[in-house]
Image (cartoon, rainbow, N blue to C red; front, side, top):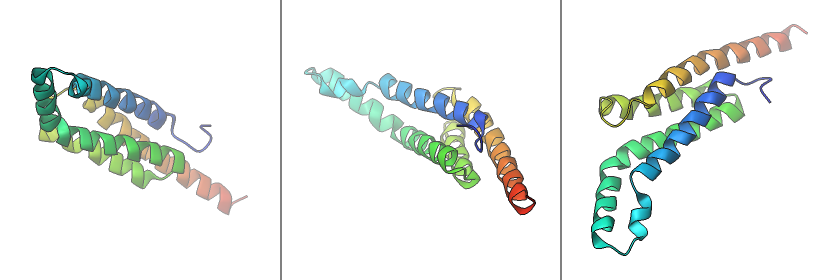
Length: 126
């Protein structure tokens, strides 16, 4: 499974997926389905306030998995940028949990480029 892929990227993607699902739970999306008007209003405000953060984190997770399965460092770099934007726009106001994602994704970008270069070199010199 990891023959041509970065193991660090796999770990980063697992952590990012868990973090994204945790963030969805934390902003109380199930509160929208409740019968209480107060819970619906609070949940709606939470979603509105965190939508920018959630959208970028969601796209970061998607591009991270695409970069892992397609072996493309460009998608990994896009995931890095998608984690970087909300983390530094909010100046870590939300959570410090995006900082490990930024570090792991940046490191895995370099490793995936090295893996791809090594594979290309082996194909040229059989």
